[in-house]
Length: 219
Image (cartoon, rainbow, N blue to C red; front, side, top):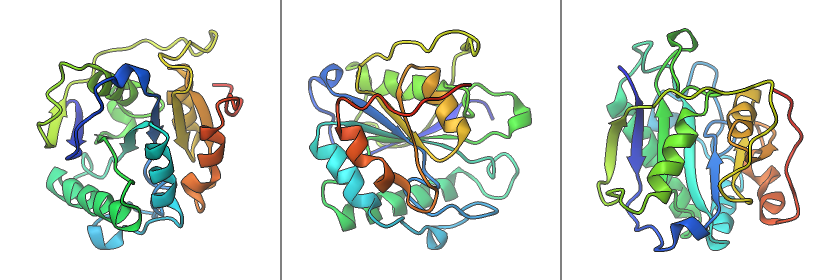
């Protein structure tokens, strides 16, 4: 298949979306415990300690929140987008159960393998570009909840050039891998690399500190 899967949340976006900073979160190793061989079912999803409180803190601070995750199990035929939706619905429910404010605006998933050469698999920035467009374009039909496939436009990254300037100075990327940092760097975001067993709790206070420019990263 072409494109990325987008799963909208069920709450309305704020009216002045452009004024709100946007944080992109990797999934495995940031919100939930990663597993060798993928998180293959809702039953295998295990929230990292403090993940829900961290998401809630970002929400209370006014951040838009978009999860961007590589899940090549789909293109490898291990399971399909229906299973993906079940896993992500479980994730959303678990976050809200642990902190009522811990709502995610949307989840974008790249289903491709590295060798597919797609534009959405991190470190390529396709999912970040799509998320920014969907969340900050007030004409977007944000009430179309559920999972949808969106095409990812071609985007050239100058990995040898200077780090670009972000659309909002507080926009951020949180991840546990270099591929996450690369995707965020290509869009000029503040970068926060976390330990895969501690996840988001490593970064929340830093993200909320407006003077913290994030981690250094060299592509």
